[in-house]
Image (cartoon, rainbow over all chains, first blue to last red; front, side, top):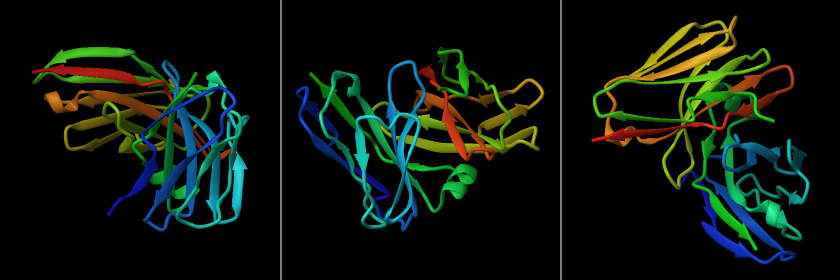
Length: 116
Length: 111
């Protein structure tokens, strides 16, 4: 019963490099989302998906791409990393967006990304 | 932008004491949730209170909601060292299907 699995746990990138943060869940959740957490700020929504093949932008989508080819996986891509993207990234899921909003989300343990 | 704002930003108490954290928000909500985050881990859902509820209990947790003041409080009774964590409030507004998290309260419980 893995829940939401994020990889890697830590990553250091140079400015301009690209990488993909992985998120996988084994709970058959339709809704998946990516947040970033910065010191002194609440979690901010980057992108979300309400099901395979459907994605949408959140509050801070610039510099990030997502796709959802399967129910289980929701990778987050940084095409050209910038120091402003240094943050802790969390993936969260629920059976549906509404259900998550009414019963809570399941979060992964996070990826700490540093861009130098 | 944040919706909920927690107060205080940090709280340090002795084991056995009660811990109270507050959350204020700006717009109308459908519900308010509290999450806990242990250091280096993801958020864990603790409790949810709906806009038509005033108080809710779950074990040692007590949550209150005052929609007229747009505020909520989380009380942890008889705190334990294992309660040391950051606590976040999150508000959900059905108008725009929007869930917003506050910046959190860092609770330290000293043994």
